[in-house]
Length: 353
Image 1 (cartoon, one colour):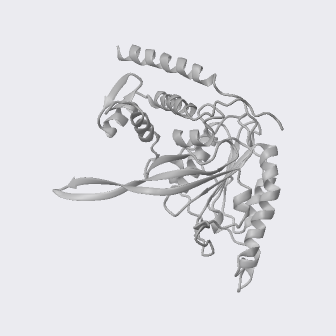
Image 2 (cartoon, helix red, strand yellow; image 1 turned 120 degrees about the vertical axis):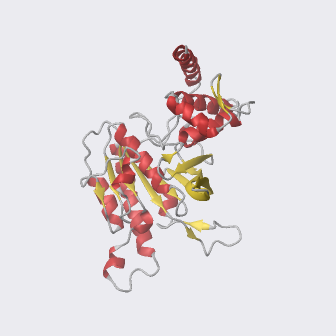
Image 3 (cartoon, one colour; image 1 turned 45 degrees about the vertical axis):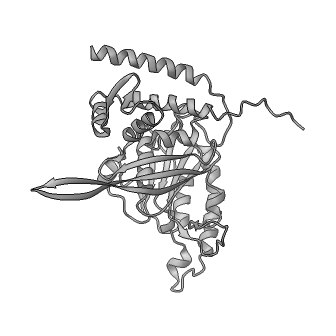
């Protein structure tokens, strides 16, 4: 009985998907989805990036993406989620880790396979970008990706070789500009997806109306990325347990907000909540369930016409036990598109002057 019920619901969802997909118009934007869209690990973030351009949203190939934010906000997790998604779709990944922090065991949590061949520890800016321009992955017909974690850790020859170093930081900014100018063309030509994390610095010269924060790399970081994602921690997730009669508290993850700060792929300034559990990664089920509940009239978690539970943890368990993750994701995509269409201008095309 339960199997027939799930099959019926699945057919309903597929019909709604088919009807919803018909509203998409083909647009020429920066980046290509011809080889498939790459997920960030978060359905809501995928939709914020390109949900109005391609069904389900996600990252196109052929572009440079910067993920920036404070320490502990989830930048490395996002990089690993994206890299793992590329490998699962048959692509190759080159992972640059100048801070030498990536643990192979941690990487496997995201389905990311790190080997001596695809893992690099560069010291200076040109090492990263020259490797990209020389790279020849096994299959050029799929999305292949380059990850860099993080750009802030890269130095220059001047800084490495001279005791006084590059005190003003001007050389590094110049090298970023030079290398990105040359490399972004290659990304588009060879259909590569390059994603790099970056730190933030307080902008001492911002003035009362200027940007409060800036990122290492100078103005190049504002101009060359096709997509910039700003990550910020909203709250820490604390769990309380009782052990031998004593109460024990642990921080098990964080809830971050990811803003699409710059977007030439689709529309900018959308944002998505992303829950990250330290020993699990991005908890997409949790945010998807909450999204459906937020925009329904019910006080319980649901999936289609099915009622799950008032408890989030119990609802997650039910979704996982019945392998309903994909159905839940499609439900979110359909609902998100319905909401997005409420904001269409519905105006006729502009007349040329």
